[in-house]
Length: 309
Image 1 (tube, rainbow, N blue to C red):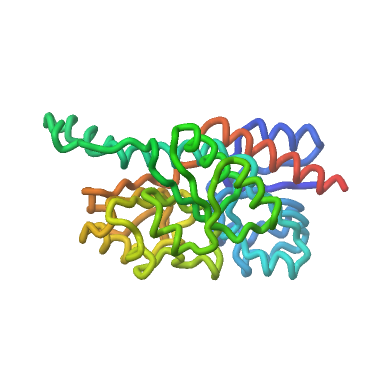
Image 2 (tube, rainbow, N blue to C red; image 1 turned 120 degrees about the vertical axis):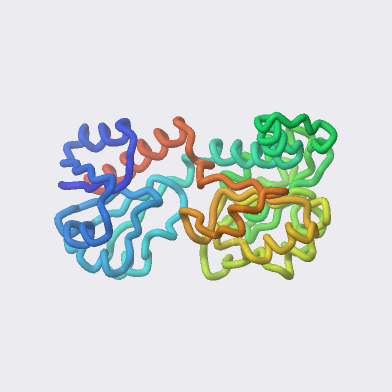
């Protein structure tokens, strides 16, 4: 069987495919038109976030049996078309939990202690000590919107730091997830609006879907405290970016840190040029060596097991 790897994948994952006897073709920069022509010759394909498996591409995937997403989000894959064509879709939601949670914590600390501003101005030979008065996280409330693997890990490490953690989620696993959140030490909110009113730090951990589109909009931002900050390491379309920028300019909230955007690479010049209380990073929350290897090996093992059956 033949597998196309269309985005960069660590050698540890490739070796698992080869050890299982699969023929591997590596085309890490393949474009849409090339993929449309070639995809029909493969039994499996591995993608990260760069490759977009749209309906028109999948229509040509006559032999494709499985799509492997080395990562969590599946919004770059037309799952409806994949289901229609009986193509299995696999991903690795377990892999990035520690990496993304630690990165989210880094963004929280950077906002709380004005680390980004302090670094930038010191490099400019300024000594702005008096302008870098921040606050400690101990005793503050972190609001988690969504409670998957990443949010659970972030809850554990922030509770260990002395933060109070509130959670709003539809809890897809039902009572088991609610019990787990309580066992970790979280308080449960039945309304996202109530959580936004209470928390000084909001961290988003939801997938992209029609239901979560603009879940943080102008109306909801207006509910947030003036000293609140919002962190998004999940998906760009969870936030109305124009409404967020307006709130930051008006100082109706204290700050924001974004690692994901509605359009990537980020092109919105208003966002790019606004520095005062906004941190921007280029979708790197999962970019740790350990996570990249874990995602690669996990997806290779899952796809190999599926194809061998």
